[in-house]
Length: 228
Image 1 (cartoon, rainbow, N blue to C red):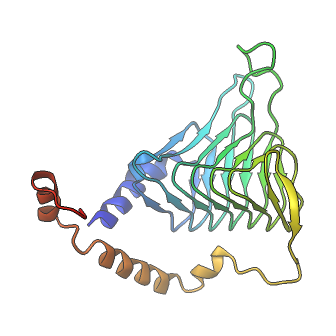
Image 2 (image 1 turned 45 degrees about the vertical axis):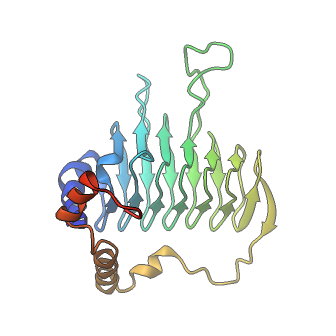
């Protein structure tokens, strides 16, 4: 039942906030996903995983002279608690995975000395295809992260990261290079048989929520038990 409610809410209340949305948008707790401002677009089979207390926010800012823009490619995963904020332009390549609690912004939002204005403290952010951001990464203005690169959990990225690299730390620095000759299995490979995947996910959801009935929910409010 919950899965059906999520799909209904996504289609009728969330998708209209995007300038463009490809097929297969899949969400959890879509009422905790906030889309603020225009110029936000997503590709096909994007998964946005939000949660109570860990909302996802995609926001563009109108400075008066320009409008921010967020462009998200195909097969992207955005996990709970992540925020993407744009004053000029944030581009997320296809097959990118964004772990929980990540923060991506193309602006400092305030000048160093005049904290009432943004001034020139903004520059486009680009995540190339198949990037993986670990838990609670921060990506700052003007950064480009190259294709296939991985950013370790808790890292702060303030300068460009080359393709096929693993970078960690604050500020993030490359600690290892990946072999570009090796084949990468990407999120798009999960959708080679989209109907089969949808069926398997539906069966898994039914199994996980098999005891999540209206009667059982009411009982947890009135007479909760250990393990509820």
